[in-house]
Image (tube, rainbow, N blue to C red; front, side, top):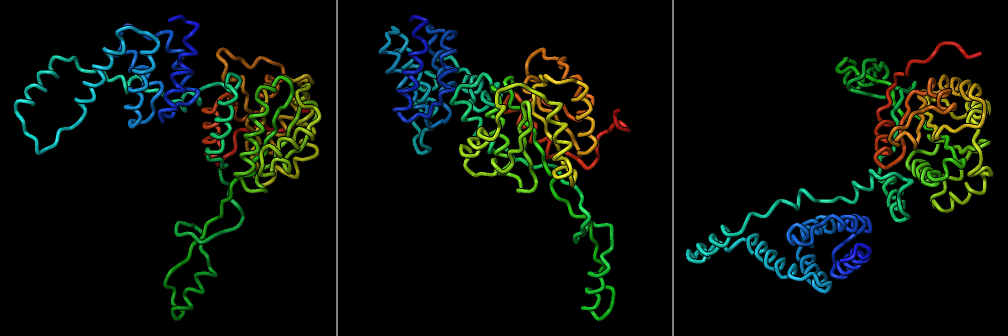
Length: 398
């Protein structure tokens, strides 16, 4: 078999499996095609087990797989492989079928035990070689995904639980574990029982989720990630309450896109965002954009202990001193400042750009955002944000 034909054989075999009713995803086909270059065709059992581990996800599809496997690879002319494989597969199926309890033929049992003793035990390749398309997709970088994988990643973002840690409000609510006495409710309870103090009612402060503010870099260096990050912002906007999230996009200037992302239809929302943001895939001025946010929007959206997320790779064309001063002011006016960098997941990455070196001293959390696993970590991190603020530098920068 020529190596150049391996991919076409893998695609054809996956197509035949789908016709037989076996659910095979494009990612499974890709893994199987890569594995064909390493699988030993002269060892039929190992080859069949590896193919089944790559392409079969449900136990009830095993019989369909074995039938299609024999027919397909026989047509490719692999010599004695299909016959030997047929004998081994049929024998394995007979060993797995339980015999009825009422049948007690000692002679047949003796023959069966003799046959089983002559056959070597089957290796547990089902568990050792089991392949999960979801796990592979979660670990794959966004800039290396195909179009189908990006669509699957967008759907996965909607299944995450997007909630921000809660904050204490000035209002109180009844609570059995409260430490403050509710005099009014205790008095009314006592009056219902003839004026005796039967039970003291307690109360504790109410809690509400913190507001979330997201500023996303849509410049040229972030073009590979920008559309997926906007899908993330749209998903979070739909998940959270209307007054609990504000979204902005920036390149060389800052644009508020909250109303556009409130649309239910994601395509319509992204279309309006594209029409509003004029500096899409252009230059980057992170410092001036954050400075404008502090000057124009901070008083409107940073109340009630807001959490701010900045999504950028840190490539800034402006002066580092402007970015450092803007980051310091932003950190002091929000509850927590998080910087998400898609390059952080790259092996050997070091934050050596002028922009990152100026911004990181005023960043509470510096996290990666390069695959679905990093999004899952972000979702857990947002939920775990406590009422305690991180240590901040005292005073303002001159």
